[in-house]
Image 1 (tube, rainbow, N blue to C red):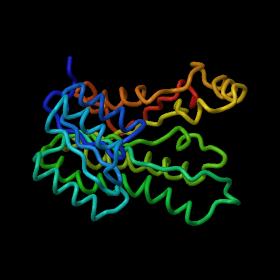
Image 2 (cartoon, rainbow, N blue to C red):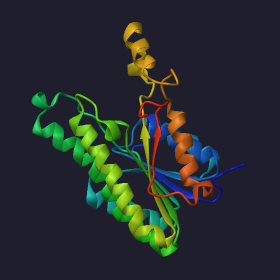
Image 3 (cartoon, rainbow, N blue to C red):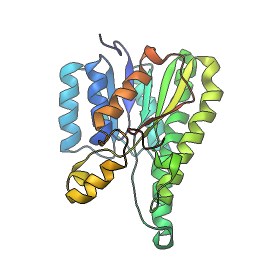
Image 4 (cartoon, helix red, strand yellow):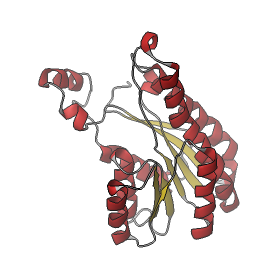
Length: 248
């Protein structure tokens, strides 16, 4: 069963990691996928070729999600080429971790601008399109550190907590027009970085997770798939923690 048959979906920051796996899974479930990242490179070209094998209409747009004018240009192109958008996944994000006493103003501003401003930009650009359709699903990538906080991540935690508040507020604004807005809060996700950790440190990390394993890109992508599909048509304003129980 293909959950996104005939749907148009856009995923920001999708050339790697969670965004890439989400774009792949959406395409596997029948969606025409538009994905963005800062620039065209080998990673974006490789993903585009993969997506176009599943749906030739899938496309890539080089764009800075934190730049309002560039985001509006993306919306104009999507309107011109497709005429609608059924699912928007705001995935673009960065980290610049440090203790507050050592954190620079530049690193604070950069994380807030990319992580939070990009969500504002894309929702501002695409909500009018969804309002005219009277349908659509917006999925914002938050984090469990936006729920619980984390030492050394004041900037990142603030940006993700901001996304959670933004999501709940927007859901109340647009729900009457048939548009859903939800957030996913990933926990600790296995990556090349975590695999490179000393075994003792990695084991300690896993021991703090009730399910005793790290999350994967696919765990997050599957949650996005559910929220983008009609299976979640009565769910809005929610924050789904996909974290193996860390936020309990």
